[in-house]
Every structure is written in structure tokens, then in C-alpha cells.
Image (cartoon, rainbow, N blue to C red; front, side, top):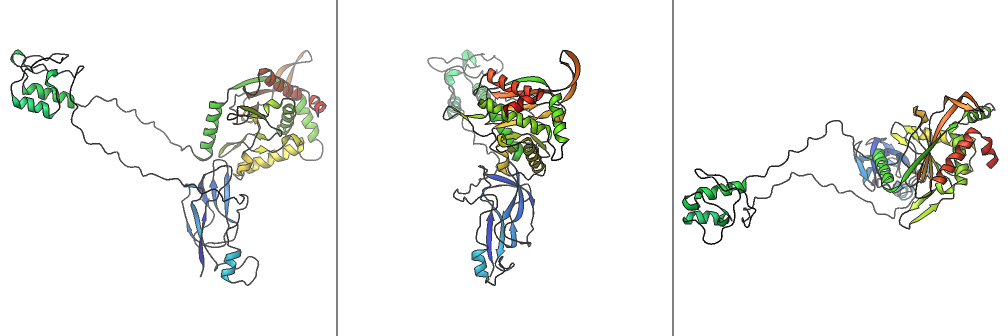
Length: 451
């Protein structure tokens, strides 16, 4: 007899607790092999294809495309032991196959730590508000009391006062009516002869008490398309908001003549071999500058009240994709050559645009290089990628009038901007870093001298 096994959404790492189903890769009735991807999900960090650790026939799927599931929620059920033969080609019986090939295995790329319990989200049903029963009006005591309603023929007094001594009321019915409704007769001024309190006076006072207080009209709901802040967009919103809340950032910028840098790149690419990008040259300049100014390759530990200077440069770079702006990370960028950096930038950019980046490719950055010149703009004051301490922005490189060797000339000019966490350094350090970067852009020999 086949055994039906349930495959749950695994822990995808990096502290992620939920994922959204983007696309099912199998249907009910399909035969799947061990470690075959069965669903594509979107987390707050990346698109991930989730492989199933069982082989057999899919008997059920849980959740439609667009559904958000917590880690540990069921994804599919698989009937194993009858539809597939053992993966090693042996003639073991169904029971043996189940015990070996279809026993739970670590998912490819996710590790094997199942020590943390699954976290499930409890969804509370939305119910209509039920009004509480209206209680009897509270007794009217000392002033200020509600203004009495005028009763013809005599006008009511604007501000009633509590009268000491006997109350001007004769009818026991009037007294009972006031008592049953918690109304203090001493707060009323009667409209009868010599201020006698009549039934009409009590009814008017009760009507005034029971009249609903005017409430302001509710503000009209905002019109237009509503887009949920979840997945990547929600994660970006939370991270940027946290950066602005926690980091006292400042920005400095400078224009630089990039003519010599562009000439050096052209000379490098004239030689047979992989082409080197401008971004790779700027990245190599950044790593050299961070070696001189390590304060900017750091993070702030608020709990310990310490600045932590980091030994390696894990360089993030902005990549625009159909899912939005993503920041893949080049590990140990300080050890890479311009050629190696070019290759890694190209690899990660391709994965980002295809939605194939792993969560680990998008975390752990220590410094970010943001080339917004590709959008045709010159300058920007970006928000720091929390918990990093700085970001270098690069505008477009365009011909501009420039004084070169004492004469006006047309040169290739770029604007460089540095946004930095003012807690880790002062303006002198930030200015020194930016000036060194600009010097290397204007004269690449400065970089060669420091290598």
C-alpha cells in the first residue's frame, strides 16, 4: 500500500517566516522525483523554487497562487511507494524504498536544521461590530449640566443651577419619572407658576440627555488602486523606514573628471579577454578607499553601544528588476580583481532579473555601491542600506565643460555622492574617503600606487 506523506513549507533561512505562492510547478496526479522543484515561492528577499524530498504521486496541493503561507504549513501530499521505483535501481520492496529514498531529506540549499518549531499565523475572522445595549442615562448632578430645552410659554434658563432646599415639584408622577430615569430635579428650572417643575420640563430634559452627540463625518476612504505592502516591497519598506528611524545620515558629494578612467577602461578592453565594466572599476576603487577609511565599512551595535568595524568588504550593488530594486552582494570584494568583479556583477544581475537569487545572495552586505547614472540622473541622496554605515552613489558620466590643465575643455564628468552614518565617523573621514575615490577616478594611477 502506498504511504501518503505531507511536505510542509520548509525554513528558507535568513529568519524568513512566510512565503507567497507564485507558481505551482506540479499538478495533482503528477509523478515527482526526489528533490524535484514543486512550487515557486516569493519571500521578502527572493524568488525560490522549493524542491520536494519525496518521490511519488502528488495527491493534494495546499494554497492557490498568491496565497501567503507561514513556514511549517502544508504544501503538498505525496503518495510514495507505488508510483516510482527505488532511485538506486535495486529491487527493494515498497517498504524498503519508503524507508530509504523517501525518508525526509535535507532540502537542497536550505540546510538541515529542523530544531525550530514551525510558526503558524492565526487568522481571526472579521466580524461585524455589535452595539452594546444602551444603558440608562447617568444621574445629572452638579453643574455643568445640559442646557434645558425651552418649553412655552416661559423660556428655559440657559445654565441651570442646583437649587438648595425643597424642590418645586408637586406631582408624584413627575418625581417618579425623574427618579426612574436618574434625573436630579434640583438641576431643573420649572416652567410652571413660581418655577414649578412640570412633566413637560422633565421630558424635555430627558430628551436633551438622550439626544446623540454630534459626531464629525468620517473622512472619505482614499480612492485609487491599493497594492499590499508584502513580499519584497514590504521588506524594502520596512528596511528603509528602519534606516531612517535609526541612522543619522549625512551626504557629501563632488564632481570628478572621469576622462582618464574611461580611457583606462578602453585600453583594458582592447586586450583579448573578458570585458571590464565601469562598475567593476568603481568597485575596486571603493575597496581600496575602504582599506584607508575602515570606519565606513562598519555597523553600529545599538544593544552593546559599540561600533563594529568589519574585516571583509561584502559589496552590495543596486540592480533594477521587474520585481523592483534589489541589492545583491559580492562577497569578499576586496580580494577580487576588476575582471573578477565584472564577472560576479554580471552573474548576480542575471540571477536577479530572472528572480533566481537565493536569500543568502541578498544579505550580509557591509557597503553599497549605487549606480543611479543608468537612469540618466546626475545625483541622489539615497537611504543607507541598514545596517550598513555608508553608500557611494554614482551619477551618469557625460561630456561637460571642464577646466583641464588651465584651459576650458570638454571632459567626461561624473558626480559622486557619499551618504554615511554620522555615528561611525565625522565629516573629515567621509570627505577623505570621497576625495580619494574622486582622485582615483580622475587619475587611475593613484589607485595603482596604493595596490
